Image (cartoon, rainbow, N blue to C red; front, side, top):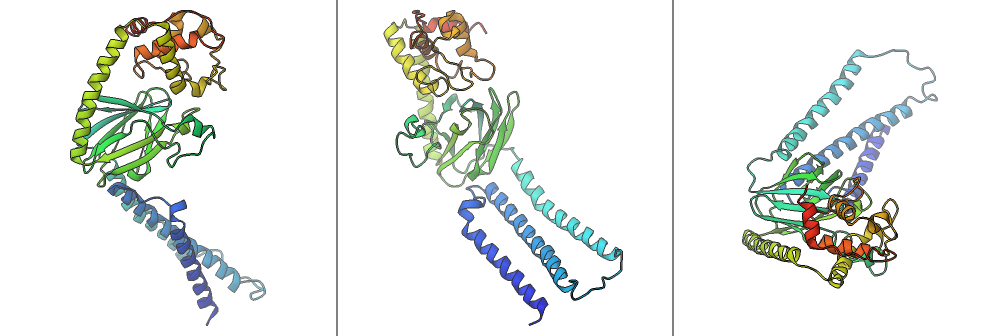
Length: 378
């Protein structure tokens, strides 16, 4: 067997080994094929480019090593004397150009398909908050927030982590199977990114802008994702869960949500119109604080990094109006705005709790009507 044939066989063996290792490591390192036609197109395009790159690497490095071996100094002590070859330069310029054009054609077709947001069956407005997602079904009077539901005890290492640690939410986004769903993505505070790998959908949520994306899922199931933009302290704690239901189940879910929305509005209105006792406000306020505030300000109110302590703070011990204003509208993109996120009664309760807990001795009671009055001023 000639040396050239031996080297060719070695290169083919190396290529086969690399390919087999890529297959074995698919679950760990490669893209997933996903659950939509778009995700399959992206995967196929990715694999095409990988194969082209591997082929180029084999040819380039094979030629380089073969040249070094065949034209080494011991075999050819007197080097050839030539400056260039016009034909060779034309060839090595033309071939990469043709390769790039060949890759650009399927890539452009895939991008055109990805950007075709027309003729949608369902339109959903997705708004990113620090650190949760709001979903609003534009053709229905349905809107809700989706937040991380992993227990704090698991996050703190106090108990064993669950199967979907940091990838579970209290209320998933629900979409119908076999229908084109258009996502309108924006943000209320900082830049987020709505990313579900199984759909091949990753769209930035930018304050003041609305970006579009879409998906069409052919198989019911639960699909998970995360915010893919570094958006602050709890960036890693705002997962995405999408539940794809059959047409009948989706219609039933829509009906249930409409009823639940009406009941929630009635309950919020009744709570806002009521005069709460200090004991009830403190109990409700602790519940709200532990669920929504303790991650930043700590359960003991001592603060955490850039998030100030509430125990002994000027805000929690100062004018009630300033405290209400901060909770309603946030501050400096560090403290998120809670207006419209939780009810007036919940805001009143958590402010009352903060002003009368730890070392704080404000002693006053904030009623939902006070919050509503300040909320309606702006």
